[in-house]
Length: 253
Image (cartoon, rainbow, N blue to C red; front, side):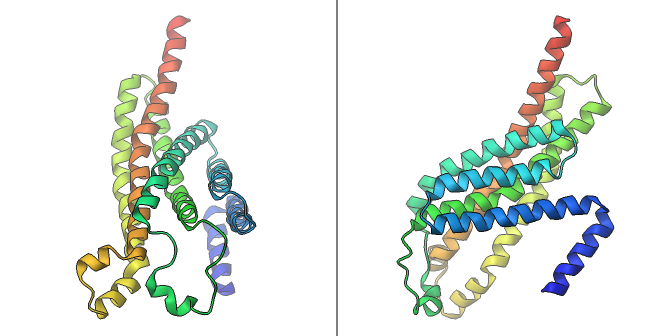
């Protein structure tokens, strides 16, 4: 593991140069943030409030420490924050209705010697997992779309706000395919062992779809995908809104 991590650091520094140190520092802060989230939840702090605060810290580090253009970073952060709040709002009822929280029967062998009286809300813990899991792909998508739009605006300053908004969808549609495929592959890679186990035991397809662990992974993948899709119109609107304000100021002057 240490050799693999050393290889990662060396390759990162070779490709990015001294900027790699900033990336490593930001990565370290986010790792510490996630560990702090686990410790705070274990100590009895409100899971949803703590997750919201830590998620904002992660977004600030992930965006502002990796994006040099301040305008791009601000727009990407606003987009990510809005989508994070939206994901939190839709995940709360979905998680309670699906009842996919906690451990599945497949975990019985590993957990039979442990007590499950952890004193925390497993539905809220499942919500926290989905929110944290979505931050990376949402921030990455918002930064990519904002950077592409700002590049278009800088190269074509005569574009109208409406044209900028339409270009945002054009840029976003190209990125969506890659991001949705990434989420889909993550889902299958996470559930491959479970699918093989269920198949070997002769479960029906309907039993697989209603398995708690499978439902939890499906919920996570679908909610993250919805967040990625929403990144396109929200980012496009924010860039359009800023361009429109600039145009109105020039008109007034």
